[in-house]
Structures are given as structure tokens and as C-alpha cells.
Length: 172
Image (cartoon, rainbow, N blue to C red):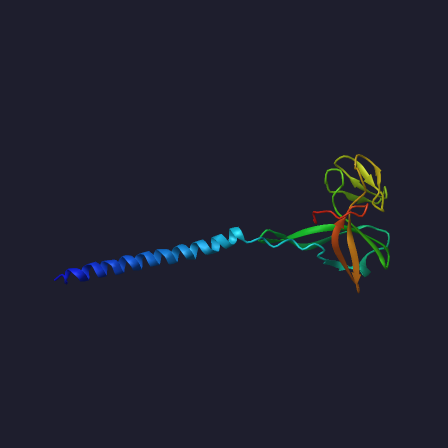
């Protein structure tokens, strides 16, 4: 019933070789994507990405309006879509300013107070003028601004800049 002694060793060696080969294939199938994930550099976040946030013809002149928009942020390999806001001031049809929604003191959210004609931060009582300059409070500098561009009737926001013109690293 058993074959010649030379055949048993050959068949056993064949099955052991097949088993090792399958283990090798499974190891490669699991380790190659893992190594690529760990060794490949993540995509860098694109600086200077412009986002359309709305129609400029609907904005009132010299009255700040808080506008919401969505922006995609790349975090390593993950792309996150975030809802952000900006305070947009239409000075004239061709001159718009968009302020970041965080106070420059501790990053609290501020609001426009029409009675005081200024942006009020309720956390530590910083007050900013309509042009973003500090009037009162502990805020160290004026409000940060987005770069703005008008494309037809659409308002586009770019990277965030501080009032002194330096680029901020975080785009929110």
C-alpha cells in the first residue's frame, strides 16, 4: 500500500515545499503593503489652496458677515473635510477682507457687535475694530486674515496671514 521508500520522501518534500511556498506568499502579501505604508512619505499638505466660499454680490457694504465654508485638509494619508468660518467685510465691490474666526489672544471665537461697531471676544474682553486692529484687551496683535481673490461673483479664500503679512502655518 505504501509506495517505494524513495517516493514517500519525495511526496513529503513536495508538500513541505508547497506549504513553505504558501507561507512565503502570505507573508509577502501582508508585509509588502505594510512596509510601503511605513516607509513611504505622506503627501504634503498643499499650501496656497483656494476655496470658494460664496457670492460677493449678496454681501452688504461695511457690515461684517460670518460665512461658513468647507475645506479639505490632508493629515498624513487621511483627507479630512472640515467646516470653517470667516468674517467677511465688503469695503467696496473690488475690496474685500476675510478675517479668521479666532481671537489672536487664546484662539477663542469672537463675534461682531453692531452696537459697539467692533469684534468682541467674550473670553478675555478683547475688542477689535472693523479693520481688525486691537482696540482693547490682552490680544497681542490684530485679527489674522485670509488672502482673498474675486473670481467673477465668487469670493475665494487662500492661506491665512497675520495682520503684519506673515503666513500662518495652520490653515483653519
